[in-house]
Image (cartoon, rainbow, N blue to C red):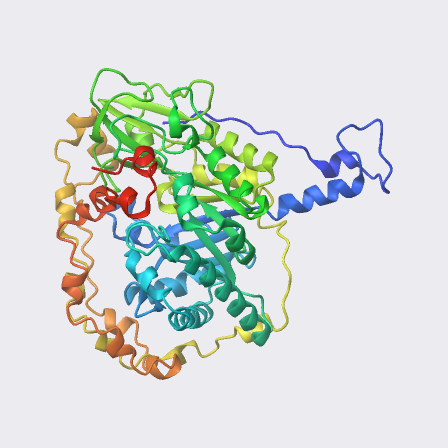
Length: 564
C-alpha cells in the first residue's frame, strides 16, 4: 500500500539572504530581516536531533520481521539508541552475553558515519522497576551504578546513556524516588563531566525517556531540576490510547480531537510537549516520541469512528507477533486497498478492515508533526523503533525506511553532511583499540551456556503459524507472495557460540574479579525460557488498580484505565 504523502516547504534562509551582509534590515525582503538571524536559524536547524531506537528483540523475529544491527542505515538518524541494557546488583550490565558482540557491531556503525552518536538505553516498558528503585535508595548504590555505566559505555564505545525508568515514584518504586531520580541525574552529569575532563574527550551524553501524561509527570519528575542535568529529554508521546481501553483512540494524536472530553483533552503530543516546556524544560532539549507502529483494536459494534466501542486488541501482527500492535509495514499489508480516514480537523490517520481498527502515522501526519517541532523550536524526535519501519521496502511501495526517511528529510535534511561536530583532542588515539582481542575473556564459557539454543527457546514461534491467514485477512496470495513455507526454520543454532566470542581475559581487563560469580547463570535456560512468549507483552502486568490509593493520583485511572 502506498500511503498518502505531503510535501513540506521550508524557508532556505541562506538563499533568501543572498550575498547581503551587515545588520541592516532589507525592506525588499520580508523573509530575512538580518543576515545574522539567518545564520542563527540555520545553526538551529543543523543541531536538531532524530534519535532512533534499535530493539534487540527484533533479531529473534522470523522471516521478513527479523531485524539486526546489519540492517541499520547509519546515515538516517543523528543518534542511534540500543534498547536495552539491564541493572544487575546495582550495576549497568548487558541483558545477556550475546549483547556484548551486538554492542561492538552497533558502535562500529560510526565507522560509516563518524558524525553518528550511539546511546545505550536502560529500562523500558517491561523492565523490572524495582531494580531502579533499589539502585537509587542510597548515594552509595547510585555511585556504584554510575561508575559501572561509565566503564561499560567507554569500553563499548557508546556516546551516552538514556534512562528509561517507567516511572519514578510510580508502581514498583517508592514515593521518594521522584527526588532520588533528580539526584541520580545530577550525580550522573557530574560523573560524566569529570570523566570527560580526565580523558580529554567529549563528555558522555545523558538523557531520559519520560512520561507524556500530566498526572505521571507531576508524580514522577522535578522537571526543571532534571532538565538542568540532562542533555535532552525524550517525551513518550506515542501511547495515549490503546487496546487496553474499551473504545478506539489514536495512540499518538498531535492535538486534542473533537471527541476528547475531560482529562482526555491532555492526551495528545502538543499537550505533553507544552506541559514539559511550561514546567521548566527548555524547548530545545525536548524531543517528541513518535511510534513507527499502530495500536489496533477489535471493534465491538458497527461503528468505525474514533471512540467506537472496542472489545480488546486486534489480531497480532504477522511478523511482530503481538496482539493489538502492528508495525508500519504490517499496516501496509493489512490496509492494502482500504480507505484511510483522518480525525476530524486533523491529519492523524486511522482505518478499519475486517472489524480491526488501527490508528497510526503516515507521511501526512509525520509532516504535520515535523512542521510542528520546527515551528515550536523543539529539539527533534525520537522514533520507536527502526525494526518497525518498512526497512527493506518490501510492503509499503515507498522504498526502504519510508517512515524514518520522512522525518530525516524534514528534521535533519542535511545530515550527516551538514552536521556540526566539535573535535576533541586525541579522540581517535584515546579510543584506539589496535589489540582489541586483548579484551580477552578467558572464562567466557563459565557463563554456563552449554545449551544456548535451549536458552533462547523460540519454539513458541510455532504458535504464530497462520495456516488460515489468507482467509482471516482476505489476502489470498499472502503465502505465495512472501513465500513463507518454512516459517519455523529460524533455528537459532549456535553450536560454537562460546568459541566464536572467545574473550580469554575478560575478568582482568575489565577489573571485574567476581564477574563470573556475579553474573553466574546456572539456570539461565529457565530464566530466559519463553514458553509463553506472547504473555511477555501482556498488558495485565501494567495493573495500576491501586495506584490512586497508594499515591493519591485520583485522575490516573480515569485517564488511562489500565484495569484489563
